[in-house]
Amino acid sequence: MLRTLTSARVALGPRVAGWVRTMASHQLLVTPPEALLKPMSVPNRLLLGPGPSNLAPRVLAAGGMQMIGHMHKEMYQIMDEIKQGIQYVF
Image (tube, rainbow, N blue to C red; front, top):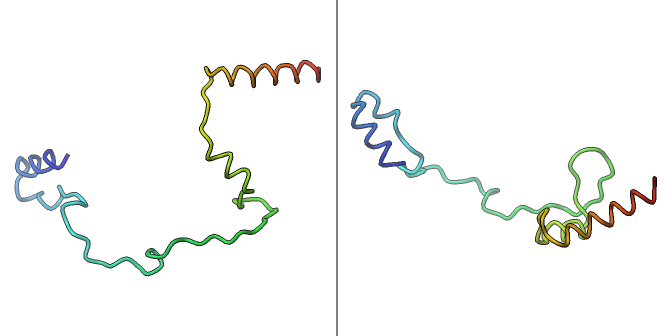
């Protein structure tokens, strides 16, 4: 992509050379704030209201497990169990 931008800059001429730049072409001279250098610390609280709230540890652990697809044999077993439960209810 940088090669494409460089060739575009040459083709367009010096008039728009400042327009064709990338973030990687210039070193950032501003130092980041101190708050960004420290790891983020989120307190462990139980929030019972609307909006974003902390998750229970077992929910976080479940989110980290490997997902199964709709064609796996385990998914067919889960669907059969759901179907049996729905048939029982109705």
